[in-house]
Length: 192
Image (cartoon, rainbow, N blue to C red):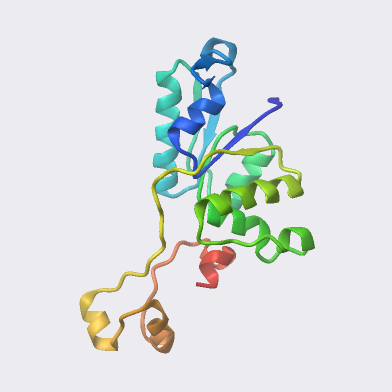
């Protein structure tokens, strides 16, 4: 079993490689000294793609990689991470933080806020993982941004006069939503 695992939560590729391979330009470990890195992902394509990018970057640096992609919804992937079945995983820092702090009975975790700021969420997620007793390091947030949005067909928007997400509340019983199967169990999805 590995004593240290890295959680590549919204992490940039360079940060991941720095954590695994080099720091300040000098090698802290070599690929030959490392066990195979087990990379896992959630069951949706974007998560799998990000995990594959990490896998290929590590392989390019000489690391052995075992891919455990499409594990399932976040709760299944988190369980695999926390139990040591995977060592590295891409994550959205806001959603990942929400998984630990929204709806929890733990007052200390519940006091941690999910914000719209990636770096704040990264720091808050590290704090939440520490409180929860999860042996993980949240790496640097990538420069990219992921923002949730609702998309409707133009004819639907015109028919119901939709210009914002809040407009959907008045017609929710008249439209069909396409949502992931785990949405009801995901507090950031089910409350949106």
